[in-house]
Image (tube, rainbow, N blue to C red; front, side, top):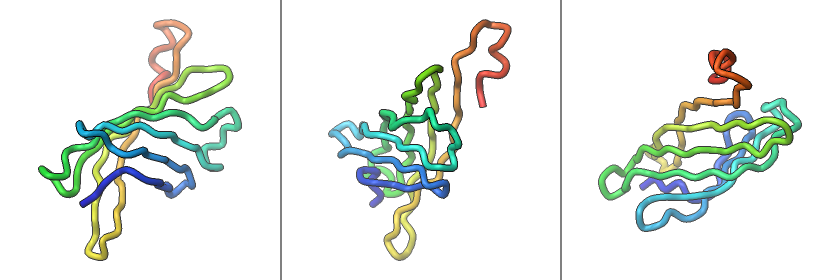
Length: 114
């Protein structure tokens, strides 16, 4: 079974620390951007999310939100993915993300989401 609790590292050396899932499969933790993020303003940021019940799906889907701790701007990223277990028992996360930056006005809204 795939459980998100623990430490994970991305291909870009970002790290995610996930605390133990609660009885409702919710979790919290921290996201630590790696050097590939290229933004010296990024700090360790809190995350919160949930995972599908592994009793229903041994390779569960999950989602989590990171509210970035930045000095001058507001950013939030949502991640949506699935945890896979290969034949050797190795767990791997596959996820998509969507980043939203605060816009100064409705006219600037078009460039606020990546």
